[in-house]
Image (tube, rainbow, N blue to C red; front, side, top):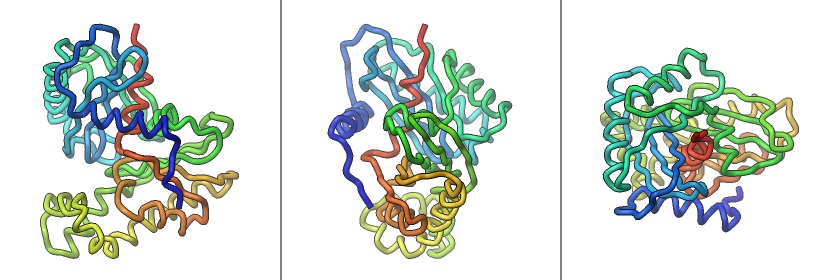
Length: 276
């Protein structure tokens, strides 16, 4: 499996991570804002007018399940809190944002996600499917982008830079946590913490490897009819060690894990904020 990436993208993602902790900033230009309401993490990213990271924040919250908003009030309250936190650091109000959705989600649910933004005080300027958002950052011409989130695995096949096929199926990081909770007889919340603890991940890997293999099977099935020679993993679940190796073994296709995969889709969503 290949994990190397071009230096420009690595620096952009490093800058995005730094922006998550940025303090007072003297900036007075236009901004691009992206909101990724994920099953596990909700991420807010703010870019400057040149699409360079300014600020951001993220928080674990279960307000979305399998791409669908299941706690509308909770999602609004969470987004308001994240918005206020970032506004306090920036020194000005955020008024608009783009949002993303898994491929295949019914339009009614996409509208529900946009309504969360509006209820939190943000004009929703764009709604973009998550694989296309990821590719705004990755700039892949040919291959497959696989967004492994908390609840679903989204697959997009690209040809000459255009998405020609998308699919989305349940299975993601939440399933990792459920398996860990059951095997170790701990709560789901404890399992979530263990899953992200680097000291615990080696002993957890044998427990969740079958779930990774299921993700690989999902990917293999959806790309079978397309000439895909490279797979690019994004999404927070892709950060678990050996995830790329397992997907590559199951699919037989070179699998690349870019740095900071949690931030790639939110960053691409922000790039697609159609500010007026």
